[in-house]
Image (cartoon, rainbow, N blue to C red; front, side, top):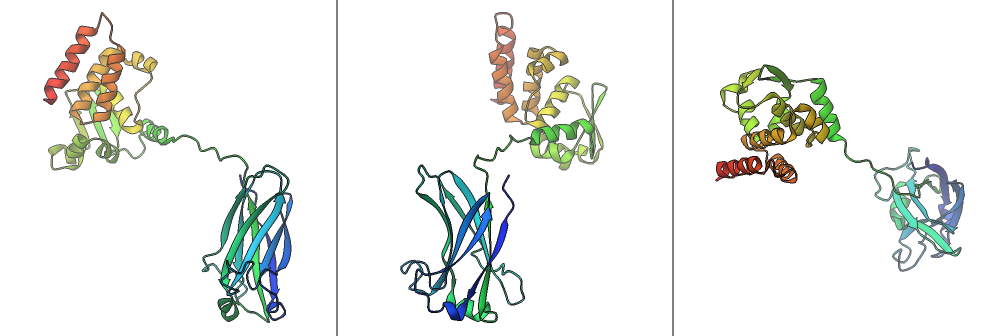
Length: 290
């Protein structure tokens, strides 16, 4: 987690500092991440060739380091209403440096923060221009992003049935679901639930060509994009039998990824005892598609 921003004002007496040459600046110091940083304000730019011969004001931050440092340097020019200007594009600069010795420097900021003519016309207050500067120190390690849990959340939605708007009667068992999910996952269900077919206006749909265990696994896959673990499959019915029925259901509801997964799982389970049955299922599916 990044440390909070530490802010400090940097003021330039514009009339007094008009005589400063390119590369000459005024300096303020700010503490962030347990370290002291130097902020340099260069009214005529910090480098001649990088600030268009003094047309731009430069705003820079630096510190000598002997370790990895990542951070963000923030800077806002204060308006005449006393509030920081948020319309200027230069509001934050990411600085990062990996050093291998004790002579390395972390440097950030802008060589062309803003044109002097713009500063003079819009931000000069009582002869001074004020910048509000801050530093955020970022964690050294990469932020750990967890794996997607969308499938878990949608699976919970299926389990709790909140907001369900359609029910299916399969072999005497009732399954509640959400039309929008089924519509997004299956072209066949989309036509059945949202199209011009008769079932589109029904809240309860009776299915005859599928078994309850198969439909339960089919629904679970639609919501989570995953099949139950082997021990869960075995607790429902024979794994081979369920995969055979699920392959047929995937074909019926036009779910190509599920079909391939079932086919692969069946191939992984081929044995002397079941090879004839599995080959018949695969042949039947191939014939149906040809």
